[in-house]
Structures are given as structure tokens and as C-alpha cells.
Amino acid sequence: MNRRKRLEWRALAAPGHDMAALVFYNPEHRILISGDALWQNGYGFVMPPEIDPAAMPATRATLDMLASLDVRIVIPGHGEPFTDFAPALERAFDRTAAFEADPRRFARHALKVVLTFALLDRRQMLLSDLPAYVERIEIYRDFNARFFQLPPAALAQMLFESLERAGAVRRDGGVLMAA
Image (cartoon, rainbow, N blue to C red; front, side, top):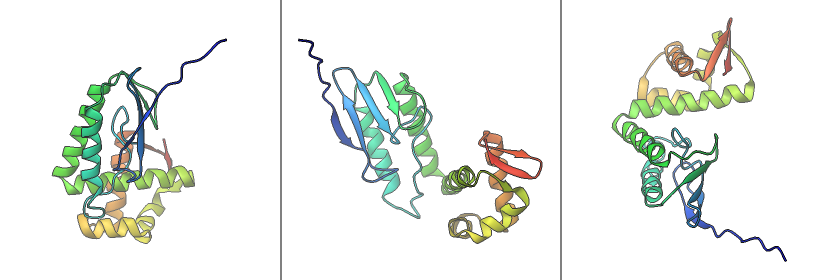
């Protein structure tokens, strides 16, 4: 009789991006299914402390917990599996420290993520409509009032240019699209 050995997984709390999130770890084969708790170059979207005071401390605690694991391969929620666990964890800690040190950077990142997902959902947007969009949508208005105090056109320009530099969006004539 051919019996396959079942893998035993440990479910570990991994709050931060989602306060109810779990990761799954198999110590025998040193496999981590990390979901949004760790990607090769970061982790899932986390709200700034001014919006959700528990999110960043929870993210840091999750990274600390992951650092205690002996991991050979990571299967993230987004992207390809990877084996460079220690460098990925270091990049995640560096990102966390940078966000903690600069609330405006953190807020800009949050708005860029929200805009990228909006573009994925909408498929495209006229670049000329972006200032009215960031003025109309509550999260952009609230973050702008709290962190930037920019005219809507300047906020839209800042977000667009930053996303374009990162390769997350592209412009086709006057149309903005997720890359």
C-alpha cells in the first residue's frame, strides 16, 4: 500500500495587513506559506498609525515572529515562491522602520497602493480626471488634509509621478493605466 506522509503545518497568527491573518509553517521541510505577511520585497498594505494605531506594531511583531522560524522556502500570497528568506525579512524590517520614521512617506505609500488598486479595478482613468478623483474620494481627501495639505492637482501629480517612477502605472497619451 502506498501511503503518502502527511505534512504537519503550524498555523501562526500574523496580524498587520489583516489583524486576523495566519501564516502556515512546516518545520520538517522549513516551508512558510506567508500570505500577505511577507513577500520577497515587502508585505501587504498596512494603514498608517494615525489611521489604525495597532496595524504597524502588529506588523513588526509578525516580522519578529517570522524571524524566529527556520525557513528554507517561502510561498507568498503574491509573487513567486522564494528562498532568500533572510534578505526578504531584512527588506521588510527596513520598510517598516522607514514608515515608522516618516509618516508622510507612509501616507504617500498608502495612497499609491489605493490608487493602484483603483486603476486595476477601473482599468484606466483619464489623467486629466485624476485631480477631481482625489478630491472626491474620502481617503485621498482625509490623507491629504492630515499629511500633505496640497491642492488636489498637486496631490494627483505627486501620486502619478511616484507610481510612474516605480513602474506601477503607465501613461498612454492622456490615459492612466496600471502597468
